[in-house]
Length: 83
Image (cartoon, rainbow, N blue to C red; front, side, top):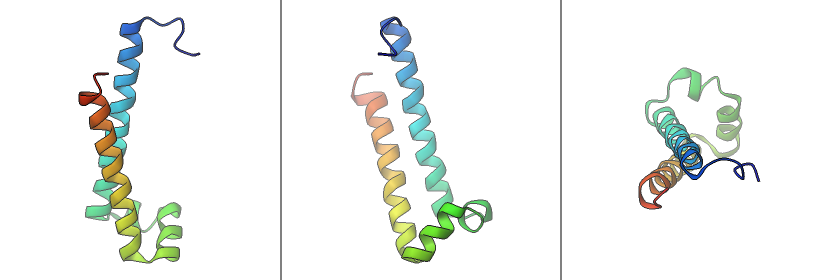
């Protein structure tokens, strides 16, 4: 296992950084969905493909749920799990 030689304190710090990254990713997704800047909404291949398949409204709902799950999991892991 990758953490076998790392001390518990250092392992906890790495996990906290990963939790912060998950929250930041979720906030980025929330920003992109709510503000809909051109770099996210119109020029992103991933978003163009999703919008073509699902439509604008359903793509917004899917990504909103995804962003809320990311932020919720990250905050739960960071504060409530005791990590």
